[in-house]
Length: 292
Image 1 (tube, rainbow, N blue to C red):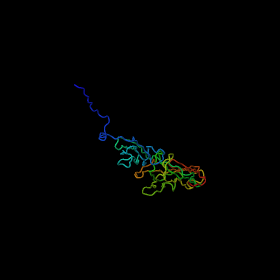
Image 2: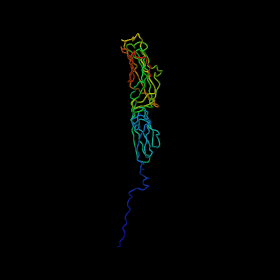
Image 3: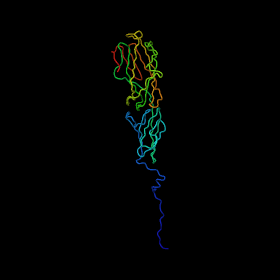
Image 4: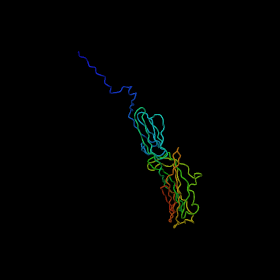
């Protein structure tokens, strides 16, 4: 037998050809996809935060391939069809956890981001300006209030608030007309409530500021009931206060924790007016002054 060249059988290719890739493979994402978020509002300063207030809006973006988007609960996304690199997440009207999933179009990249949605949990007041309302020599006092909605680490710019009316409960020098049973705001029927007020601004030290002012004032009893000099007849009265909140576009009403607007006169003739965590006082002999 003569020598002959041995034929080497063909070896399988280590890399599938283009047809194989197109037939069943998954395209690689370029560049590697990531997900990020930015709140619409610049206060609080951390715009990448994932704790948001009810109604807050956030831009959610993926790098790399455009994606299809899904949200499980806790709000909405827009657009909610097709593929895109970014969507707007709008938090819902109640506390929730919202998880958003972005799936890269034509590749295997899946990213998720979760948001904690919180409701207003309280509201407080602070005096406007530096002067109180007082009429010498009456044992009266009052102030102009700004209201703030909390917590402070989210922005409630799409929240509206209002105050429900209530009737005074009186003792001592105030337990005579016109105080007992007097309505706090004389708000109109059928709701007996103030107009709805939105938010005007936000700071991380104060929270979301209500776009309005409140007049907190005691009035004063007649001289026959309180006296004209020490020792005055002491007394106090209060209105049980209910404030409500809602999110624009959703409208479901929720109550804040209840509190009191309270006015007190002591035997020395000092009047103290308190509401939503803030108090101011005047002595009957203080100079007459006007509220800010």
